[in-house]
Amino acid sequence: MAILVTGGAGYIGSHTCVELLNAGYEIVVVDNLATSSSESLRRVRELSGKDFKFYQIDLLNREDLEIVFKQNKIEAVIHFAGLKAVGESVRLPLRYYHNNITGTLVLCELMQEYGVKRIVFSSSATVYGISEHVPISEDAPLGATNAYGRTKLMIEEIMQDMYVSDPIWSIAILRYFNPIGAHSSGRIGEDPNGIPNNLMPYITQVAAGGLKELQIYGNDYPTLDGTGVRDYIHVVDLAQGHLKALEKVMSTTGVEAYNLGTGQGYSVVEMVAAFERVTGRRIPYKMTDRRPGDIGICYSNPTKAERELGWIAEKGIDEMCLDAWRWQSNNPHGFQEEDNLLVESNIS
Ligand code: NAD
Ligand code: UFG
Image 1 (cartoon, protein in one colour):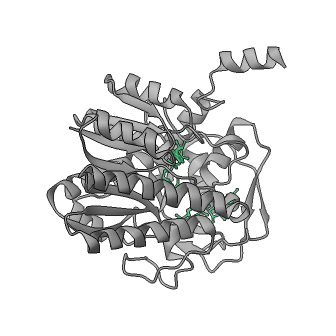
Image 2: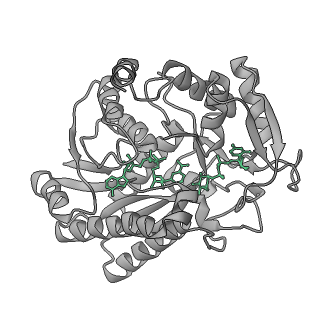
């Protein structure tokens, strides 16, 4: 029996695959490599010392995906596959709705057909929209502010309906706060395409000299130093949360949402200071206007996950910064090997 991991070649998926393999699970990975590289999976094998099947398949292709269910005995699914760039989702909403929602529908239809009714789904704190109160608990009002967020909200609702229609379903909806950091080996990590949108990969690229300076989006929020506050969570802690959620869906039925965060908020300026302190690198920055659509403060109440899953985030921001930096400095071009880059530049 195997765990099907969709989107397993991506940032959070690859870290979760390592944890699953280390814990003795058999896994099967499906990914179309739209925003990732098979090199991450090669390194997952290297880190875990274990092999697994990989299908380069688009979830939108039902026939291809059905082969995975035919060829393997799947007992549960961890569903990471999706597009996640907020700005892009505003420009290309149909692409996001089609990829994220239709992809999930095709997956869940096949799960239903093959009697696989346990799923752990990657949702996001973005489903809380502009939240009035912090810390944010799972029963806070929901409402997304962009197409990406609405795909997550709609999928959550679809999953609620699946459970209502058939109470054999067992569904854990995981609402991640801000995942950062990397595996402590420095072999896998976040590999954004182009200029990063998110804070930590931007900081690490400034530290590496690839980007000149960080722009801090707004210093007039009602926070300690005026800059935005977020709940940063180490990606390995997050990955371990998936194993706990998997244990839960294996042992019960129902549909439950869980915040995965630390419960602690840090401002942009605090993150920059922590990064500088633990890495010894200087991060030049300048204050600019607020980024449209940003909220001031967002951090979780993670006690439901602790109570019901027995999970708690253990790693602090120093470790998050150090691991993010180790990954960046060991892999200046992400998963693209230096040799390949040289070959490419010779060709052009
Ligand atoms: P990622 O882009 O690194 O990984 C997503 C993976 O899904 C990629 O490998 C991509 O190739 C694959 N994929 C996308 N569409 C697919 C399709 N139709 N068929 C097959 N594979 C497909 O992103 P990540 O940061 O690892 O995020 C994983 C999940 O967590 C996503 O669903 C994302 O929305 C969610 N999430 C991420 C964050 C974050 O800040 N990283 C926060 C909240 C939620
Ligand atoms: N920030 C900067 N400069 C940058 C990038 C970010 O000042 O170059 C600030 C932002 O204004 C914010 C904080 O750093 O205050 C964190 O920003 P990120 O872009 O790293 O993260 P967000 O909280 O804005 O968004 C993330 C994911 C979304 C997800 C959301 C809620 O990128 O996909 O968390 O889970 F929806």
